[in-house]
Length: 468
View 1 (cartoon, rainbow, N blue to C red):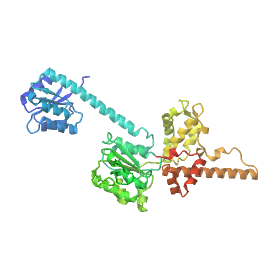
View 2: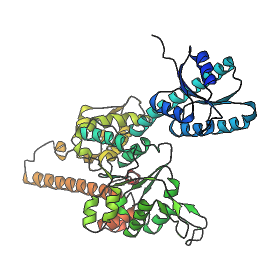
View 3: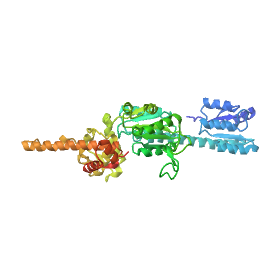
């Protein structure tokens, strides 16, 4: 099969030059001709071009101006400048602007062909790099979103569609469902993928510090502000700003956030100068923001400004078909934690995992698999490797009571087990909502701080697992 010849576009206002170049290059390349810059740009819109050869001096649009317009739309297309000896400085300037090379008049065909081949090779390498980056971006964007669930797959397709737009995205879902993974996927599939991805948990930062974290502050703005500090909006310029737990943001800051979204500008705390921002906003919450609006805890205008694109992440309980897939994914992800690298799981243990209700969703599943890997014996996760809350109470009952005393004892044991299990689930949930902050968990639950600490100790809960 004959390989397709590379297409070269020649832009020159002199008909004789165009004709000579075409005759000499036509055998090796597919040649397109343009008598000026405007005609060259029309050719680029209609045809797939691999290289542009342009004269530096042309009427109406110079080679420099043509180069600038080409690079605006075809960043990786190689451009060679043809120039006279007296305008080498202009050719060097063109190189700085993105031209790949230049060649002097009168043109020597053998030298021109050598420059063309070098530039075409450069263009192929760049194109391969771009394609590779796209593949890596796709892998990086979705590598931890493991699913065969139709609703989740539809969410992935939606992300691919909306990521390339500048639309603000609101993600809702229970704690532990993977909202951050979806936010990162929006970033990786957008045109901002090479820019920064900056995140901030609006519920994990004290209210009086949150404004400074978002917008930055000037030196001397408040006690302790010994240096000027950039906020998240500045750091996310030309990238994506992920506002996690947006439902926790106090209403006075909601007003300021709305102003930034509407005007794309803000001032640092203690400052007077308006700063422009070009950050794409992705917000997430485990609350029902529409209900929060109805109960006057969240601004309605901000809610609709954030909810240009809405994504609801289903809980793990709503996608039970993914549990086995996720278990295998986490076993592979954390296998280095095991003493035996060939880690496996028994059918009985897998069955227990598939019938648990997973109040902590995917995050809880990952933590339990990590714990089970560490406790596994001889590279095998079995029932004994799993925490007690996973195991159904009835499976522990080996005999049926035959006396009144045995019945009373069994009832008391079962009651204690049910209450302990309920207490454990209550505590883990409230700690997740508080981001692992004991004081905040106490405020949310109505307990005092010491009581929460005692419960954490009683149930041997790892606080780190509750932090976002």
